[in-house]
Amino acid sequence: MHEERKITEDLYWIGSSDRRLTKFENCFPIPSGVSYNSYLFLDQKTVLLDTVDQSVSRVFFENLEYLLDGHKLDYVIVNHMEPDHAATLGELVLRYPEVTIVGNAKTFQLIRQYFELNLQGHLLEVKEGDTLCSGHHTFSFVMAAMVHWPEVMVTYEAMDKILFSADAFGTFGALSGNIFADEINFEAEWLDEARRYYANIVGKYGIQVQTLLNKAAGLDIEMLCPLHGPVFRVRKKIEWYIDKYSRWATYRPEDIEAVIFYSSVYGNTENAAGLLAGMMADLKVKHIKMYDVSVTDVSYLVSEAFRASHLIFASTTYNGGIFPAMETLLLDLKAHNLQNRTVAVIENGSWAPTAGKKITEMLTGMKNITVLPESITVKSSLQESQREAMQKLAEAVAKSLDEG
Ligand code: FEO
Image (cartoon, rainbow, N blue to C red; front, side, top):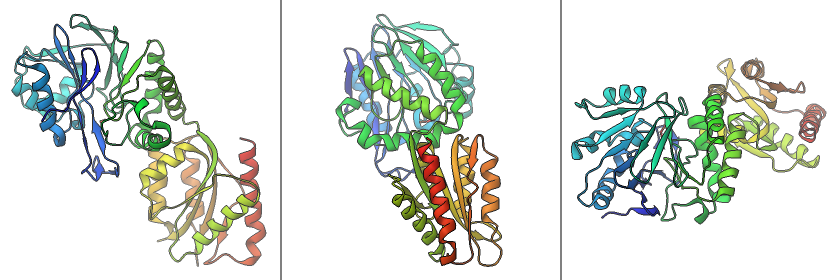
């Protein structure tokens, strides 16, 4: 049964949510699901903006058929060709053979790679600044290469001042009836997932996101329609969210806070991490977070590293190197271009501790990372004689936090 939602007089949300998928991109856990948003304008010409993932295709096509009510589909604008939005494009073309696909040269290259369809005469290629008029509405196209994939573009609708932003401003999380951000408690209940989505999906491409934000600054935006998560229609909330994006894209921390990432085989490195946290708390450091990197999925850890200013890595030595889960985290942080952080290192090794040196090498290979000199080497378990050194490390982190 169709379950479309009305957004404006002639714009509808015709997406759906998946709560069964355990890992987005077969990679990132999504315990609260994910939505796939598609939007339809019923104007003199009918215009669809993106399709949906295969998993929700049934209701998508029911929504589309119901709203078109026998009218033809004139255009589908493909802002992003990744299959979570374009898997149903092939079936769309078969169901609506008169449709014209609107995209850029790279979009069409990817369409040909994913679908063997004869699209001759059905492609409308657009470039930066080109426009398309559907009657009352005029769409202009803004290229956003690598705001996840190379073909990505965003579409601005001038009459209602809507930015269809592709993956940008998207978030993990299924939609539950309320499709607008002002109908849910976005800051308290969704921001962590929005940050985790950003850091893991788009975080690597900060420079490209900054380019898009600069282009968006020249647009008068009253509504943000991303491909995942809620629609933003309150200007203050849009500005707040753009500010978050600006911070993430420039790799500036949101919070001057400390996060301790530790790996521990028999609990001794965990003990060292816990002692440090307690000493920092005694020094009035607030909101300290600790994560066992073997327990918490790395996507949450990457997100926390994007949020906090001070990161402490405490790792066991394993196979003559860094403990595997810790190494995965560090490789992920490097892959996502994390920058501008203050870090400290604790290592453990019963006979040849090497993790600390290797962690420091990995961190210093990243941009603008300050490594505090007060590192600790644990040999099997922390000794009473090392309490003073740990206190010095706690004081160094606390001082650095105070300095912002
Ligand atoms: Fe939601 Fe890059 O696809």
